[in-house]
Length: 199
Ligand code: AMP
Image 1 (cartoon, rainbow, N blue to C red):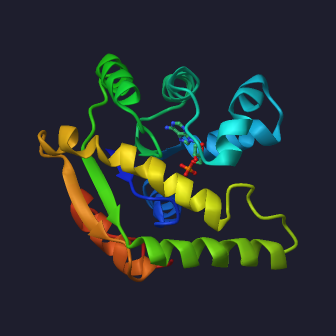
Image 2: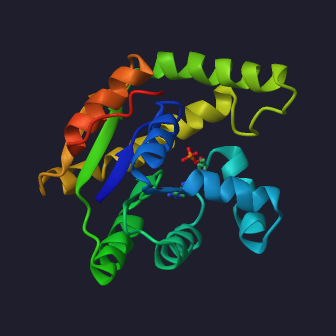
């Protein structure tokens, strides 16, 4: 079992890597962005609270996101471990997470930082929007250059939390501007398991 936190700017490939880890290791993937988008799509109370902020690329209030993560980690089986993706993004969220993981007896094993230049991200997001359009789906409402700039700015706040995890010796940096398989191999070396040969 392994408890991971993935930190990286939007479009860095955290979601893809998380999917592979879920497939190979059976860990729980907890992406606050995905959970919020689902809630918005299903027009839940939570979704209505989060909609405006998500679509503008701004942070959703701490109490909303913390409540969401607490519920998921308490309800779901985390016997194989979990991947936190997109959380925490503020000091308040990080503090709440400490309390929660302590209570659940599930300490973090690794914090993996995805490093990638901003101009590469911009072209990835444009590509994703185009693909989504040609597949007949609407683009994600937050998938455009203006919103990406805002989200990159918000990402600056997230990076301020890295020293907190660095002090505890949990952080490893990964070059995310490379082939998906290479990133997987690097991550699996960090957590000490081999990637599945079928990808
Ligand atoms: P993501 O897919 O992780 O980039 O998240 C998409 C959007 O969801 C963000 O731009 C925020 O509006 C919102 N969001 C996701 N995670 C958080 C969080 N931990 N705190 C506040 N807002 C969040």
